Every structure is written in C-alpha cells, then in structure tokens.
Image (tube, rainbow, N blue to C red; front, side, top):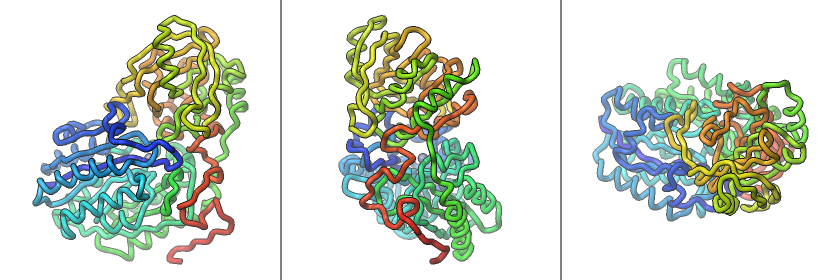
Length: 502
Ligand SMILES: [Zn+2]
C-alpha cells in the first residue's frame, strides 16, 4: 500500500495585521518546513507526523513524503507562501502517482490574504490531481473552522480530542489507520457535519476540566465505540478568525451509514447548543489575580495566564498589562514569559550581562495589547533562544524565540522578565528552565498562553488564574469587530435559534 503525504498547518488570527510569510515557515523553532525523509524523521515526536509515521511503519505501509510546512499561529498567510508550499506538495503527489491514498496534515483554520478557506483550496487542488477515486483523509486541529469545501473534498477527517493538544500523535495515527482501512476495502467512510451558530472563546474548549466542549467530546468518544462509527469529532473553532464559517461544528464518519452519521453529528452539535450560555468565560482582573497570588501560602505557585495575548493564537506577543500589574503591586518571586521586543533585546545585548538598563518595552506591535512600559533592571542572561520541548505537548521538537534576555527588575527575588526577539508560546516548563528559572520555585508565573500551558503547568500549579488583559485572543468575543462572520451567531446576537435539521 502506497500513501502519499504532505500538508500545510497554520492557524490564522485575522485581527493580526502582520501577514505570515514563507520566511516564517522557514524560521527554525518558529516554523517547521520539512521535505521527504525529514518528514519520516518526525517518527516518535509529539506531533501529528509522530503518529502518522509510526502507524504507517507498524502496518507496513509505504509512506511517500512530499512537503510539510507548519508555523506559529499568526496573521493571514501570504498567497506567495501558500502557492509555493502547495505547488511543492502537488508536484510531490504527481511524482508519486499512482498512489492508493493521500494523507493531508492540516490545521483547519488557515486563511490567506485573499481567501478565507486555505484548507478548502488545498484539498480541492489535491483532489484535482488524484481524481475522485483516491481517498483523501486529514487529521485536523480541534480549533478547525470547518468549511463545506473541506468536507466536499475529503473522504474522512479526524480531529484532536484534547486541548491542550496532547493527542496529536494519536490523531495522526487514527487518520492514517482510517485511510488504510478504506484503501483495504475494510470500510466505506461517509461523513456528516453540523455547524451551529455558536462561536466560543478558547478557554471553554479546554479538556483538563469539564468544559462545555468537553461534555460533547466525551459523548464523541462513546460514539466511537458504537458499531458503524469510525470517527466522531467536535471542532471548537477558532474564534479570532473573521471568516463566515468560524465556530463550533461536529463531524461524524460512519461505515457507509449516512443516516447514522447525520444523527450522531446532530446529537454532538445539540450538546453544545444546549450548553451555549456555559461557553462564556469570565477572567479575573489583573489586580485581583496578582493579589490572590501574593496572598498565597508559602511554596505555592500561581499561573497567571495572559489569555488575550496568547502566542498560540497569533497575537502581538508584546502585551504589557500583567507586567505593569506586577510592578505596581511590588510583586516578588514573579517570572514573566514573555514580552517580544527585538529593540529592547538588542539594547540589552549591547549593554551586556550585569549591566543596569532602562528601557521602554512592549506595546509596540499594535495598539491592542496595552501601551509600552518603561522599566529598569539588570541584564542577568543573554541566550541564543532555542531549546528542546520536554512535553507532554510537542515533545522532541525545538522551539525558539530568537535571542532571549532575562532582565531582573526590582533586584534579586523580585520580577524576572524574559524579553525575546520573536513572539512565542510558553506552553512548556523549558520556556523557563532553559533560561535558568525553575518554575516550580516561583510564586507567580505569567504566561502568554490561552490554554496549552495547562498540560505542563497544571501539575506544578497551586492554581491557574485566567487574567483579563487586552489583546486579540480575548475571551470577550463582543470586543471584536467581525465583518465576514455569518450572522446571527451566539453570543454576539440576541435570540439566535438552531435546531437539528432546522
Ligand atoms: Zn488548536
């Protein structure tokens, strides 16, 4: 059996002004651009391909790798980047023909400068190369904004069921298995999807607590144990994408039973719809969060999540609200990951380790993440910026935020601020440990992360507090000026109605 594979994965925050370019895909530790054998070398990593490659090997399937490009979430992808990567993938598929199937590794919420549905375009293009009879299956992110075109071009899809996405390898393996079984004639996948008029903040999709979305995901797991159901997926959607089809959707794949698929997809969607008011998230104010952390007992660790400036949601990465709050409160034992500010990094590098500096940091990328902040401190560390991810999410991969400086504000034991050249997403303990900061020994950790941090940080945290900060991944969806999103939609519009089949 020969399966050709490749893909493009990016999550687009359309409120980010800065486009995502081919250079971003190629920047080590920020993007991943791998070809041929480099894809097969992802075997065993905590990535989708980690599971795809392992499952192909286990089944004795010949996996023909083309090109895979992944990158940190950000603004709309340039047409030039999308075309360059797509053409490589399509050329690889043409060269591999004849093949028995195609496994496309996609995110599901990628938008281009001039198109809202990049995945739909890529799937269509692949379909036109392989024709109608070669099955195409895709593993997809839980934050997929599902379009009709994606469904039309795929034979089956499987979404992650965990947020933090600790099940990327399992999902990749499940997609590969479903494709292989289809090729072998052991099943005939048929899909139904249900999109409901509901858009939700990321925190309401978390699966380390019984969030509203998790209620439906739990039911999807049950369905997958029922006869005839091959895969059941809940997409929470990515709400910071102003595209018509953003929001929550379900997809169920059955073995040649369209009525069962329809019934299951509607049931999963209805679970979300019935709980629609529970998807509202009410974060804690900066001052209250810091006060609670400072009042905590000795040895406690409070994670203050800067949820509106989350690196994994394509924000500015230079929001200052939490740092300002820490300074105003005279906080001690506080470590901040992180503020992107290449000019400040350059100034600290020029001053050198041990130098006292006064700088204006953050708030420079746009006007949506808090104003710049003047700080004084001592340069304690200058680091080239790259390090290994320990996991549980993304283990075995390398992250980099460019040159990184640790600045000590308020003397030893007060605030340790990481300044970085590139925006990052601190979801792993090594975002501190690599820079000489032991997170389990700090009272306050502030993280620019919406939810992925929970996989690594909940085990060491006394408490996690989602903090109300300004930014383009805010849980307050009414603060966004949507223009392309379909309306009416809950909770932006009053009295929105939906019923299965209605
Ligand atoms: Zn996601």
